[in-house]
Image (tube, rainbow, N blue to C red; front, side, top):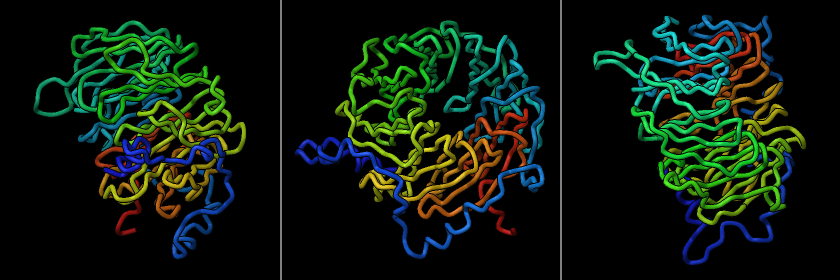
Amino acid sequence: MKTAQEIAEDVSDEEGDVFIDSGDVLAEVPDDGNHLMDEDDEEAEDGVGDLPSGDSDVKDNSLQHFTTHNGSVFAISCHPTEPLAVSGGEDDLGYIWDITDGEVIVKLTGHTDSVCSASFSSDGQMVATGGMDGKVRIWRRVGTVDFRNWEFLTELQGPDEVIWLRWHPRGTILLAGSNDSMVWLWQLPSGNTMQVFAGHSGPVQCGEFTPDGKRIVTASEDGTLMYWDPRSPTPLFKLSPQDPRFDLENITSLAINASSTLAVVGGTSGSVRVVSLSKGEVVGALGGHAEGESVEAVQFVDLTGTGSSPGVVVTGGTDGKACVWDLATMRLRATLEHQDAVTSLLAHPAPKSYLIVSASADNTLRTWDARTGALVKQHNGHHGPILSASLGLQGSVVVSGGDDSACLVFTTEVDESG
């Protein structure tokens, strides 16, 4: 995926090309309804607002249910290659389970409070769970025959309450954001602490490794964003609400483009900012969401899979909207509608990288064609808000966890025979 690389070159071209005219940087882009679509795409969007809201009378079209959790499911992650998922919940437990038949592979114990984060490592050989008890517990695969044998490896200490976990895109390095304003970095399997990042003054609500694995971006409830070299405890740059261009109130969501040069962040004010990581400054402001409605999810999408199109980012808010933005023009391309808050956005891998899955508090997930804004499939079966979701098996399935204590497995697209 090269799309973001082209944007990146525009952002920091050594020969002086400017990504956005300086006079346009602070301009909020309103949701004026001018969606940039082809004429033949407009019909596909008709009727989207008339979809059912996932109530109990709507037919359950899931493939599989996993109902072992006793309480809300806060976290879910699919294995990168195998038909496995790991989930974590309000019952202080995690499970590795088979998404084809719902069988428990391993019960992940040891937490004394809700498991709010659970994730497979990038190679699928380890699992990390993070809890409100401040514990980070690591399991690893045993043997090479199959993925059904796992053992407890170690417990990592440090955070006061874990908000999120992220594995390095290519290595067994784990990053955690904490309620106590700290960010922790550990090396596995040793469990050694590599770095503790201090600088935020509130709970660190989101954080990511850059896709190239070289840097870290974190953002906090205090409205600050920091850009780190993993080898240094001092940020390379910091943006704060004292900069009027960057006042998002509390920052709630973050995504980084494929070439590791742009970050898009959303906040509780309903605002979205585009940040150049090479310049350390705001280069765009996106409207579209209702004022005061929190932006809960951000996801970059490659519309063509060829790297030849302008960059596109999707932002999801508590106003029920997922806004599709063209970053080359800072214009709203399409608006995807739910009946309640959008809680998660997932980008489909190539060759269908134009597909995006949204999860919502309206009890449904929806697969969309981000090129047109057309609904591809609605996923029904939950009886409560969906709190987490993850794509598995090369994007052919989406696994979700909800407030109804259930995890469900769906195919992301309509069956060929359907």
